[in-house]
Image (cartoon, rainbow, N blue to C red; front, side, top):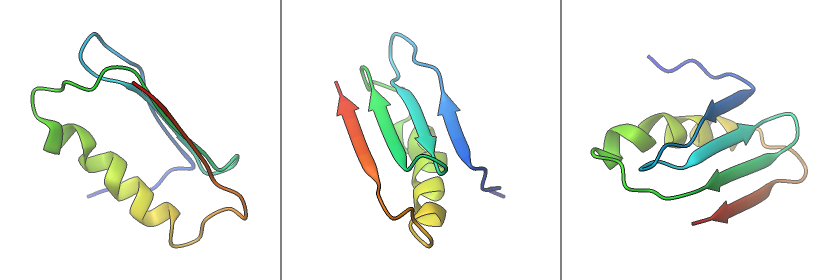
Length: 67
């Protein structure tokens, strides 16, 4: 079961990006290479977090990605 937290953070590796999703600031960042062995499993918690976030988003949401 997924439990929503105000911040979801994953540090980058050589094959996965840094993910920093912050409810308090409204900043959604994905930075780095994205070559996970199982992309569906890697991004599943990210998509769940976004589903919860967009039920009640901040007034301003900033999305930043760099690959």
